[in-house]
Amino acid sequence: MNATQEKLKVQLEQAIVAAFGADFAGVDPILVSASNPKFGDYQANVALSLSKKLGLQPRAIAAAIVDKLDVSEICEPPEIAGPGFINLKLKTAYLEAQLNAIQADPRLGVPAAKTPRKEIVDFSSPNIAKEMHVGHLRSTIIGDAIARILEFQGHDVLRLNHVGDWGTQFGMLIAYLREVYPEALTTANALDIGDLVSFYRKAKLRFDTDAAFQETARQEVVRLQAGAEDTIHAWKLLCEQSRCEFQIIYDLLDVQVIERGESFYNPLLSGVVEDLDKSGLLVENQGAKCVFLEGFTNREGEPLPLIVQKSDGGYNYATTDLASLRYRIQQDEAKRIIYVTDAGQANHFAQFFQVAGKAGWIPDDVELLHIPFGLVLGEDGKKFKTRSGDTVRLRDLLDEAVSRAHADLKARLQEEERQETEEFINEVARIVGISAVKYADLSQNRTSSYIFSYDKMLDFKGNTAPYMLYAYARIQGISRKGDINFKELGNHAVLLEHDTELALAKYLLQLDEVISSVEQDLLPNRLCEYLYELSKKFNQFYDRNQGVQVLEAEEPQRTSRLILCDLTARTLKLGLSLLGIQVLERM
Image (cartoon, rainbow, N blue to C red; front, side):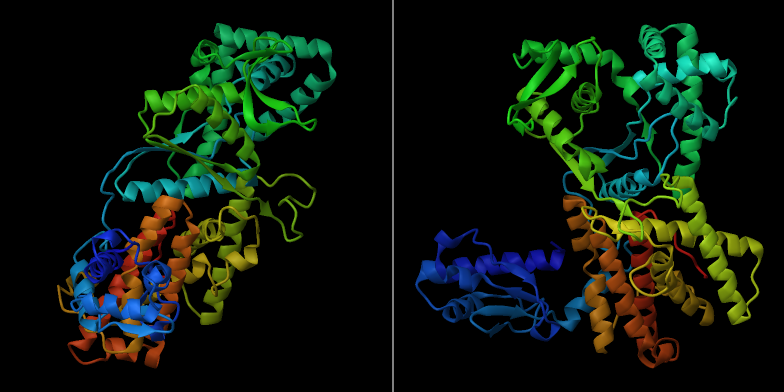
């Protein structure tokens, strides 16, 4: 809820008490944004909800509230409409004052969180010895955007990359490489990542079909867990090689994340099992140690167990996740832990959250959230794959987006008969291409799947990154054309005279509400929708007489409109930066 809405809510609550007595203190005035601008800016629907309790017609209730309502500093006189809606229209002078107040504020009027806290965002999470693919796109981009927004709000955010860097797959890979390419286990960068992935696939095939090799691989796992020097050295080399490849992707995406893989929690796994046993939750089932869960059953309708120690004494993902959860609460002292993974893992998170709760490991002031997302689909509506049916490498996907942006820009320059340096073209193509991929993903409700289309995401029309970037660059073009330094405009008063100016002003003042909502519900698409609508409002404002009313207006209107342009550009830049998207001064 933004500051204006909060003020109006308080005034309405006071008016309700003044009209009907102290028994009605705390009644929600049901204040919402007006669905149609012609009725005003806000609408209070409380009269309808109080009708039965008061035994009065809603319009009579609304009239009694309005009689006690003092919003004269903020709104025009309230109006009652329909069965008893209270419509409120913001005063132009109030809007002007609000815009004047945020001109010098780098946060554009967005307050920081009143009670900052330690928050952990667990995202990306690729596997060592495998390449990052399209399946890692959403977790990486959504997780980064969520972390950026929480950091902007003043929270202490720990960005964690829970990579798969431990377990059977390493015993399997190391055992295979000892036979076919021992140099890879002793020499850094002996293999490139593509060859490493190929060897991993061959090792997996061998593991699945060769019982003797399976036993050899298990012995390598034992050596790894026991800290055998040569096995640990080999493991570190493989991890570092993958890590370098991951970093190329993170650099392309401008994503910061701290690696803390499964291996980090390995020393804590036995303690997890011991403590679950002490709490009376462990049950032995076919040699495995399990916790039976409420609300989860197998196909036969029998209670479903969460296995925390296998019959051979080994551990699994659930054990590691329980250990990591405990560490994050006890050692990291996190108050909100956010896991950004695909929706297919929803049951897994519900299960180990339940076990941790039963064990008493989750304090009342700690919140656990699984943030699910849908799939990236191809044009055929199925999982996005290459023509040969393989999973798309994330590096290839990003390179293709940049390549297409490069081709589009070259064609546009030729059409406009414009000359630009190769450095300019490459930089614009990189930012547009990467931004297009990010924005196309973030602009979707994360809970839904979406169809991946280079053509749509690189389009300069519609809710796309190029449209946003162009809106920002257009404002910078005004600055260049008029030889204006926005920073030197000074603290001049904003004057709102035209409908398009009022519409733009009202939208600029909703930024705090939007960011607050994303902070709570962790849906970055709401910020995308806001920026898209803001861009449209700006274009409507600017297109009135093709911008003549900005640069060629008389003072004080000229400076006022330039300030509106600057506030719009700064809002776009801030909003896009929270999505991990760079802006361009020229396109």
